[in-house]
Amino acid sequence: MKKTIAMLPGDGIGREVMNGAREVLSVIAEQYGHEFNFTSGLIGGSAIDERGVPLPDETLELCRNADAVLLGAVGGPKWENQAPANRPERGLLAIRKELGLYANVRPVKAFECLEERSPFKKSVLQGVDFVIVRELTGGLYFGKPSGRSGSGEKESAVDTLVYTKEEVRRIIKAAFEMASGRRKKVTSVDKANVLESSRMWRETAEEVKKEYPEVELEHMLVDNAAMQLIQNPARFDVIVTENLFGDILSDEASVLTGSLGMLPSSSLSLNGLHLYEPVHGSAPDIAGENKANPLAMVLSAAMMLRTSFGLEEEASAVESAVQHVLNAGKRTGDLAAADEQVLTTEEMIAEIKESLEEDNAIIHIMEAYA
Ligand SMILES: NC(=O)c1ccc[n+]([C@@H]2O[C@H](COP(=O)([O-])OP(=O)(O)OC[C@H]3O[C@@H](n4cnc5c(N)ncnc54)[C@H](O)[C@@H]3O)[C@@H](O)[C@H]2O)c1
Ligand SMILES: CC(C)[C@H](C(=O)O)[C@@H](O)C(=O)O
Ligand SMILES: [Mg+2]
Image (cartoon, rainbow, N blue to C red; front, side, top):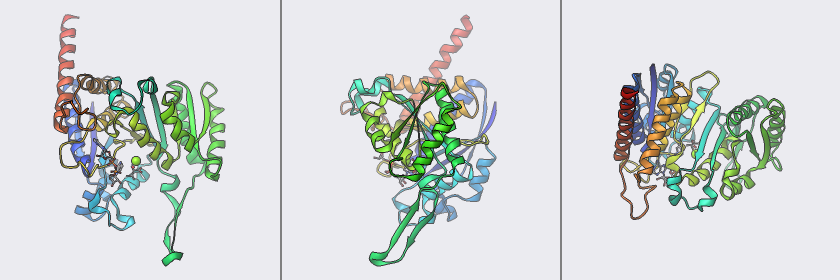
């Protein structure tokens, strides 16, 4: 299979983990006889430094000419004082909007071998396997008006939470579709006791539910959801929610897996060009130190292989390699216990590649004797 993959490393650890994903994908290409053409573009702070804007036109063009997009992370203290319209994060919001990436899928699965690294009891983590479907191109992040006016104590700031029915319907449909292929339960998270937008969200969820009689729908207020997520996380299958609620709940949920560095995501459009990125940010506190956990990025690449290219076997091979190295006790600093050896980002990637190569050798031996 011949595919073009646009890589946007971004800033901080985004660059380090993207290098790792590229190496892993190169091994997959070689083993399975694919041709992956990697193109590379600027986004975020690095784009501001080189082109003066967080999302240059040429980066968008590069993405549109690709079969899928991989993104590292954007942002960092260097660009904290940029004008709001020219912050690194604006590049990320703009690419999501421009490519129509309305559905951000964030799977949360607790690896048994990492249970010790989570602050939760084993009994809480048992059976944790859910997906957060976060609306990504509307809500509080994009609503107008947004801005500041006035001065002194009379200065005011406004952000607007606005959704059209159409925007709500398509994300809720995406969640029901996902639940249909899973444990058939959708939890729609809102703040319908206060927000008008949430009341419309809730009504729309009820309308969509009629098309999916086999899928259960429950509504949950977001404050309760934040609590249930850590009290009884195994109760969830598919959570669907507004942009900002989904952002907050997914970082919270990452603690169930042991580290934010474990959470991958896909951002899906209606036209088939999708973007894959870890849930974490550019981690300025460890950037440039070869310390970042590259597994969220590697698992995002696996999601790309499966969702964009239909390469189920290849995606599973990457996920099995991740499972294998974790089972073997290999840990970056975010996952290591005090008495455990700490691997660098590059060493972790080397372990993944080695595991893929061993796996491949076993497959060849089995084929030879079949
Ligand atoms: N998708 C994105 O590009 C994205 C997401 C979140 C935050 N950000 C940006 O990143 C910058 C830093 O934000 P933040 O510090 O609040 O969040 P962050 O996700 O970058 O880091 C939060 C904490 O988690 C740790 N961490 C995150 N990823 C890790 C990994 N792969 N391995 C090991 N440890 C990891 C960091 O070291 C830090 O202690 C900000 O500019 C923010 O806007 C970008
Ligand atoms: C960097 C920021 C704009 C982004 C978001 O809030 O969507 C990030 O936190 C994420 O989760 O992808
Ligand atoms: Mg976030």
